[in-house]
Image 1 (cartoon, helix red, strand yellow):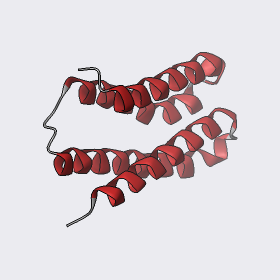
Image 2 (cartoon, helix red, strand yellow; image 1 turned 30 degrees about the horizontal axis):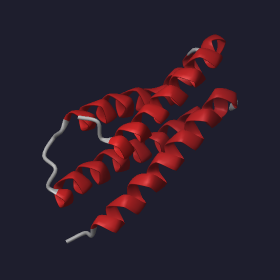
Image 3 (cartoon, one colour; image 1 turned 90 degrees about the horizontal axis):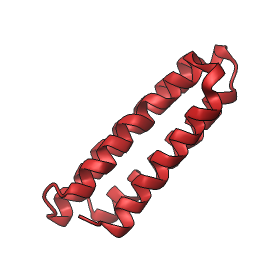
Length: 113
């Protein structure tokens, strides 16, 4: 049985990797696309698995704030791919990524509903 702390460390570490490589993708050369998309994909999967693992260990069910975090996860998971395809909109996409990340953190800390 995996402990709650293990899930938490895996979750936070994966979020840091996803965010770091997502913002790297906005400035990276096109040659790095395949590697960056693989890394962000693995990080996104680890975020999902560890997040649901924590929900299970905490016996929280599926509250509303988790749905908001899931939507944020979907947006952030797609952001690295968009960064390579929509270079002209990089500023807007970086702002959206930042807002999604802050929203996800706020939901985890405050748990409003």
